Amino acid sequence: MSSSINGIIFDVYGTLFDVHSVKTRCEEFFPGKGESVSLVWRRKQLEYAFIRQLMGTYKSFHHVTRDALRYAVKEHNEKVSAEQEDSLMEQYLFLDPFPEVKDVLDQVSHKKLAVLSNGSYDLLNPLIKGSGLSHVFHSIISIDEVKHYKPAPSAYGHGAHMLELRREEILFVSSNGWDIAGAKNFGYQTAWINRLNLPVEELDLPPDKEFRDLSGILVWK
Amino acid sequence: MSSSINGIIFDVYGTLFDVHSVKTRCEEFFPGKGESVSLVWRRKQLEYAFIRQLMGTYKSFHHVTRDALRYAVKEHNEKVSAEQEDSLMEQYLFLDPFPEVKDVLDQVSHKKLAVLSNGSYDLLNPLIKGSGLSHVFHSIISIDEVKHYKPAPSAYGHGAHMLELRREEILFVSSNGWDIAGAKNFGYQTAWINRLNLPVEELDLPPDKEFRDLSGILVWK
Image (tube, each protein chain N blue to C red):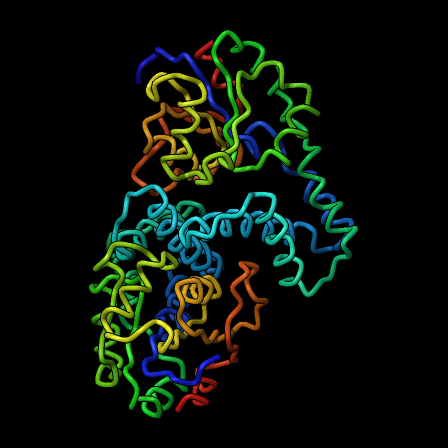
C-alpha cells in the first residue's frame, strides 16, 4: 500500500455520523419495536437504492429512505401519521458525529478532505452544516449528481473527479463493508472502520487497512 | 390487465421450491443458531449478487451462495469444515417443491412454461431434474447466460427471448417482491405469490395480482 495519500474521502452514515438516534426515535413511536423497525428501515433503504440502480429506475436517497420507512412500518403492522413520518425522516438531518470524529478530521485537514455519500443534498447539507464540520471539507459530494449509487464504479469516480486527484492517491474511509469493496474495486486505497467488529465481506476485495474507530486513520496524519 | 397470457415464467427459490430444508441443516451444524445463520446466508446471497452486479464483478450464483455462507458462519463466530460447507451447499440441489406446485403446473401446461432464476445451472439443473417437474418446462433459464442478475431488465429480457414471446404476453410469477418489481419494470404481467403475508415493496411497481400460494394462477388455466 502506497503512503502517498493526498486526499481522504469519507462515507457519512455510520462512518462519521452515528445513526443510533434514529433507533431512539423509532422506539418512541413504536414501543418495543423501535430497534426492529430501524433495522428493517436501514436494510430496505440500501436494498431499494441497489434495486433501483439495477432496474434503471433511480430515485434520490431521500425518496428511497422515505419508501423504506413506509415498508418497515407496514412490515411491523404499524401505522405512522404524515407528521410522525416527517419527524422520523428529520432524524437523518440531526445525527451526532462519533466522539472522535472532529479531532481526527482536524488532524488530517492538511490533506484534501471530502465526503462522498449515497445521501442526496437535501439530507447531506443540513447534516454536515449543522455538525460544525463543514469547514474541514474541500467538497461535500452526493452521488445524486451522477445518479449512480455506490458501489457502482462511477459513483466513486465522481469523488476523484471532484477532488481533482488520481484514484490511487485517495484514501477512502467507510464503516460499510460493501462500500469498502466498491471503493477498492474502483481503485482507491481503503480503510474500513469496523465499529461493529464484523467479518470482512466475502467479495474478494478486502480492505487495505481495518480500524475499530476513525482515529486509526491518524497513521496518515 | 390483459388476459392473453401465452407463457408463464416462474422464479425458483421460495416460489416453486421451499428453502426451509436449508434452515434445518443449518440447525444441525449450528445448534440454536440455525435459523439466524440461514437468514443471514439468504440475505447475503442476494446482497452479494446485487453488489457484484453494481460493481461490475459478476460471479455465478453458486459462487456468491458459497461466499454468503462463509460470511454468515463467520458473523455467528462459528466454523465449518469443507465437508460441512459442501453439505450445506448441497441442500440447494434437493429442495422440495411446495405442495401445490406439481398439480398447478400440470393444469397450466398447455402454455409455454419456463423457470428464470438467478441460480446458475450447476444449482438449477440437478434441482429441477430431481424434482420430477422438468417435463412441464419449455425452458430452464439461468441469468448466468447473460450474466445480469434479476432485477436487471436484461435478465428478464433473456426469458422472453428464450420463450420467443413478447413480454406483454408473459406472466411472471415470483414470491420475491423485488423480483416482481423488476419483472413489471421490464414489462411482464406479474403475479406475486405472497406466501409470508408481507407488505408490497415500496418500489412504485406493485404486482398486477397477489396470491397466497401458487394455486392462485389457475385463473389463467
